[in-house]
Length: 220
Image 1 (cartoon, rainbow, N blue to C red):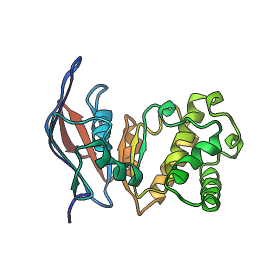
Image 2 (image 1 turned 30 degrees about the vertical axis):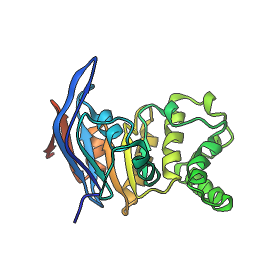
Image 3 (image 1 turned 90 degrees about the horizontal axis):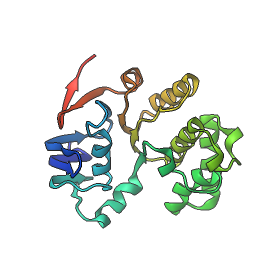
C-alpha cells in the first residue's frame, strides 16, 4: 500500500531561525491516526504547512495521493481533499457570521446550497454550538473561535484531517467533546499536532516526537 502523504528527504530552513529539517522523511497511510509532539519551535507547524503547500522545502519531495507536488497549482487538489486546522483560528475565520464560516468550505467545493445547509445544521448540532450560529465571528472569545474553526473543518467532511493544536483555549468539557467526535470518526485519517499528550494518546495509534529536525516514533 502506498502512503497518501509522503515527505521524502525534506530539508527546510528559515533565514532567521536556521535549519528546521534536514533530510526528514514522513509517511501517512490511509487510516493512520498520528500524533506529533515537540518543543516550541521544533517545526511541527512547519511540517503541516509543507504538506498543504503553504511552505516549500529547499530540498526533497512532497508526494500526495501518489503525485509529486511542487507548484502552487499542484496543491489545489490537496487543499480540497485535506481538512487543515490552522493553529491561529483567525487564519481560518473570515466570514461575517459563524454559520457563514461553517458553510464556506462546502460551498467552495461546489456542493449545492440545500445540502450545505444540512451539513451546517449537522455540524452545529454535533459540536453543540447552536448559541453561536448567528454570532459575528469577530466578537467571539478565543475558545469560541477555536471551536468554530474546528466546525469549519468538520463541515468539509474530509477523509483526511491535519489539526494544529486543536484544543488550545478550549475548556475541559469542550476538549472532551472534540476527543469523542474524533474517536468516533473511524473512517478518517488523522494527523494531530498537540502539546496535550493525553489528548493524542486517547485518539492516535502512532505518536512521534519531532526533535532536532527528525521524527521519532515513541511509545507510552
